[in-house]
Image (cartoon, rainbow, N blue to C red; front, side, top):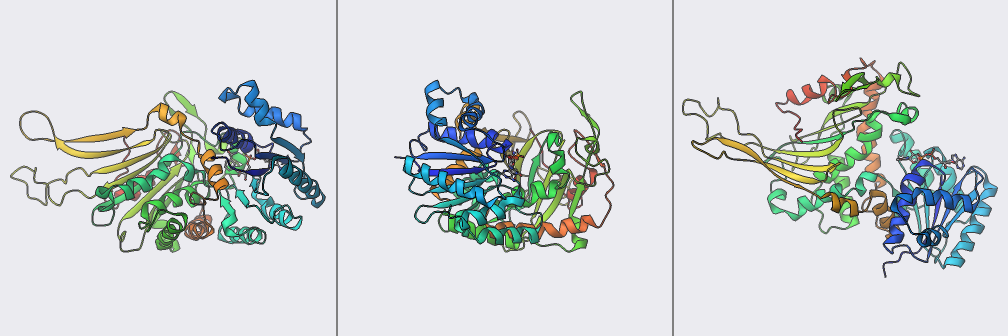
Length: 495
Ligand code: NAD
């Protein structure tokens, strides 16, 4: 049987993440039979809720799945609520009592998952109490899931990690980067290591540059308060983007297992050049959106958003060039960019191959040096909102004469396949139940990503940016285009 056995304790059980992502994911796992009889959920937060009220909230959060009455009653009967201030030691006694009770009632084998869906400043307090109050069990597994952000720089991340490690071993810690739960991110490895035509060209002899774009078409919406203290560099580059770079850049693992993949990812991250402050100025640019219009809709400037400082110097856009200093990648820029309020929503990877050495289709009176090179082959991996890949190639245009015409081999997963595919959180929770940490961020990865990003942040914090510098509805400031142009490249961005 596929059934997994565990008690979930969700800290922040009344919160947005719990309601929008966690309860729906648990329900999907329940429908698929991964969760059946032997599971229970304790929701805990400060509010005084009854079990009945909590079960109503859980019911509402899964309403879109159209559960039958029977399913609803069965599923939600596994949910229990305990009001609890995480800073109050006494409350952990109640929590332990309930946990042990449920363990017996549902025969949970002392398997426990602690999900910290709360602000990170509470993580250390919670984990130390889990240990000191013996809520961590002796005989089952004890897995800790924590949400981003993991620190605000290397120092704070390291401190946070040390606190958590007082109570949990690295193998017990599952740091969520929900990008790693996405189908097409996991597909990067399938494309690379399952296709000799790509893996044999996956190096600086054949690849000109790699481009990673994480574009959002929305502004900060109601997250202004949080976002204004973070910015795009910490919110998108340090975590998601660096993870994608490591998957693209890593060496093939001996076997596709957690330990081997981890080792290769860490090696790749360790090869990324840590810039000096001068190099940061050369290689990274930032932006903040001003007013703008798109498709007849007008947008307000970032500085006018709710809970944003009207003189905010927070970046809503980052573009940069990363260099991976190893045999495989020497000289190949990895261009990354991420921003809000851009022209369209889309996360994509473009692998731009080198053009043919000579354009033999040039006219007879042009020399090989004068002639334009052929358009490059580009492998595009579409991560969201559409999912799939495409490859541009040069073919002959149909008809008389001999004209070259770029064509595109294009594959996208169908809407139906996507509807049935598991959501990122669902996959990650299942991985955690099974004890598979492959698609989570290891401390070594987090640490190195911060080292790379810290110097960028420090350089920028010493200078006053000229914000706003891009109009809403565009693909960012001019400097992001200049960044590639000075290397003789362009952002590849086609529908
Ligand atoms: P939220 O503000 O909606 O929920 C916070 C929860 O913590 C609430 O249940 C609240 O009651 C509880 N809480 C706060 N102080 C407490 C205390 N002293 N004792 C006990 N409970 C307390 O936040 P959220 O959006 O659900 O986010 C939770 C975490 O997940 C944050 O770290 C956030 O950065 C991260 N995250 C959220 C999302 C998302 O989509 N919401 C996405 C990625 C990461």
